Structure formats: C-alpha cells, structure tokens
Amino acid sequence: MNDTTRVEARPDVTDFVNRVRARLSDLSEEEREELVGGLEADLAELVADGGSVSELGDPRAYADELRSAAGVPARSRDASDEPARPLRDALAAGLDHARNRWEALVNREATVGAWSFLVTLRPVWWVFRAWLAVQLVDIFASVVNYQWSGDRPTVVPTLLGLFPGVVVLAVAVVGSVQIGRGRWWPGSAIGRSVAARVLLVGLNAFAVVATPVVLGQFANAADAGYAGAASAYPAQEPQAGLRNAGEYVQNVFPYDAQGRPLTGVQLFDQDGNPLVVPRFAGETVAPGGETLVSAYPWLQGERQVYNVFPLPRREQELTPTVDTRVDPDAWTSANPPYLPGHPLTVVPPVALPTVPADAEGSGEAEGSGDEVDGSDSEKPRSR
Image 1 (cartoon, rainbow, N blue to C red):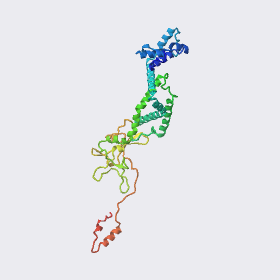
Image 2: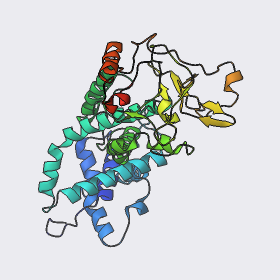
Image 3: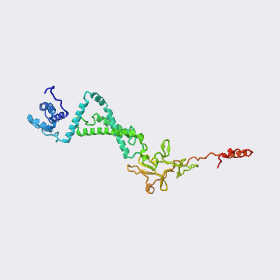
C-alpha cells in the first residue's frame, strides 16, 4: 500500500502493533520487520472498513501465531515472560489511548500554539500543587488539633509553626518539581509503570478538585470570625457584649475606689440592661494549643448570667470531642471552674473632686451680708 492510499493508523492500532513487537523482541530487527512491517497499515485499513482490533485477541498470542506461520521457532520462556494481566493491560491501553488522543487534539493547527504556551507554564503547576498539598496537610492538622481559635489561613502554611511550614513547603516544592521533570517518578510515558501512571494521574486530578476548597479558605476567612460561635449561644443577643477596640472583652476585673479587687460585681448600662461578656468571647485556647479555657456564668436563681465579674473559668483538654457547653455538674466534678485572680493585686485609689474646707469657710463669711449668693449652695460638699 503506497502513501497515497494509506489509511491513518489509530492509537489502538499503534498500541496493538507495539505489543506485538514487544513479544517479538528476541528476534533481530530484520526478522521483526519481516513479520510486522506492514501490520500497522493492514490493521488501520481493517479498522477503517468497520473492523476492530479487539477481534485479533491478545497481541501476545497474535505474535506467537505470526512466529508459527513464518516457521520461526517459538520464543523460549524467560524471566521477562510474565503471565497476562488483563487489568494491568487494560489500564495501560486506556492510558496510552487517552495520551494519544490528547496529543492528537493539542497538536492540531488551531490549538498547537496555545498548548505550546501552556507547556512553558508547567513549572508553575508543579510549584502550585506542592503548595496545595501542604495547605491540605495544614488544614487537616488544624482540624485534628481542634485549632478553631479564629486564626486565618496564611500563604505560607504554618503547620502549627512558621518554621516547620517553610521547611515542609520547600521539600514539597523540590519533590513536585523533580516529579514533573521525570527525575523521581516513572511519569506518564508509554511503557512505564502502570501503577505509577495511575497514581500520578489520580494525584493531579485530586489537586485540581482540591484547588477551590483550599482557595475557599482564604475567601471565607474574612467573614468567618466568631459568626459560627455566636450562633451557638442563642441565649445572648447576636450583637450583645462588651467590646474594647472593636474586640469582644473576655472578662472584667473590677476594683473599688481604694484600688482593692472586687468579686461578684454586677454591671448594668444606663437603661438597666446587663453588660455581658458573651460566652463565646470567653472561650480561648491556652498557649501551646492543648488546653481549652471556657467562661462560666454566675447564677441568678436558676438563670445563668454573664454580667457578674470576674467570670469563672474552666480548663479542659483540647480534643476534637471536647464538650464546650456549660456543664451544670462542673462545679462538683474533678475539674471544676474557678475564679481567676485579678491581673493586678492593687491599683491606685481614686476619688471624686470636692471643695477644699478653707474655700467653704470663706464662702460662708462672704454670705453673711445682706445679700446671699445662692450659687454657693450648689457646690459639692466634701464627705
């Protein structure tokens, strides 16, 4: 068949011929060419006429039939003669077929330019998938260690510490780049390990799926705040709570005019409404990330109130299953709440401004005449 009438071979035809050639690898190139030299063109014509390569059966058996028909001695069995593996062969054929179809698609005149440009961006993908993998590990570590204290995700994954995050990210980038270059991985080339090819395709597909999940952590960070925690305590109004510099106050430690610490002080605003510290604001993670500190209320009969200060605290081991709700039996448990000590032992005393005694005396003397200035009666008196 000359070039003017040759039917273009399909990927499945090429794959079948390659497998037949591999079975005949013990022969010389001249002997192999004599047996399969025109096979690809013949099979391509067969497929073009409506036939199927699958009708020829196993390429190994087909190669053995060619040997027999040509009078070539049967191949001697050696360590390279492995038993047929239908699943492995099917996976390899599927990967080869997908690769050939993709290459045929991107090498068209309309797409070859765009694909050539995208190929130059492969290193960017290698670095990005490494960053993505470390971010996923960082998110998983945060969930396992129950680090829900409001920290926002960072461009450099912290992995519970900036230095470990930088080191792990650097190692991941080097590994991903080397895999992309084909130095540390069999890659997706035809003839390489089927298991490795499947695993690499799966990891890349997973990275694509995980991309919106990880990037969504950054998009939602600004809106997360304490929204979820606030909704968990419907007893308090969503916006109620003492704030300082825009942040919720976690506790209040009152002192009297002489600077002495006070306990059990109730606070109300000008309308008689309680000034509260929301329970979710009093929940923090102690330094080290292993202890959860929760605010506990005072009791007004059976009612729990959060406007009596200082608020008791309770410390529990931070685990994914820790119960953050107020436990009515906590006070009689082995781990009861406690009143925290004031941050300052004493503070400077304070006093209201008063009128000095000598000024009061002079005022009375001046008022002994016929005309009395009634404004003196409005001055505050010392007590």
